[in-house]
Picture (cartoon, rainbow, N blue to C red):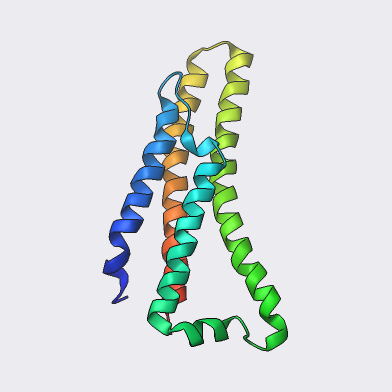
Length: 151
């Protein structure tokens, strides 16, 4: 929307950092930083901070707080849990996919003793899956921001 240009630098930097972090695993003897759970959780916290900050900035504090009570007051705890779950799923999705790819490459490497198959799998998981995961994380962050600032 009209407020979208404001978020391009943050979302672009987020994508580039995640993409490069995921591709680093394609280099022999290097490990992806996103295999450590702290990195995706840190990114998730940044995205959620921006989402809530922008929601308060655009809609106002009163409307922001009122949105947690919709459709009625008793739903507030469930809405808060939903926001927490949104962040947890965002970070665990990235972490799990990158770690799972690294585990698959390691297991197959030990099974076939470093033939051409593990090299191809390593490139596949590093380049293709790493790019897709960075894209998905960034697009979900962009969607969360867009929903938070919509009327």
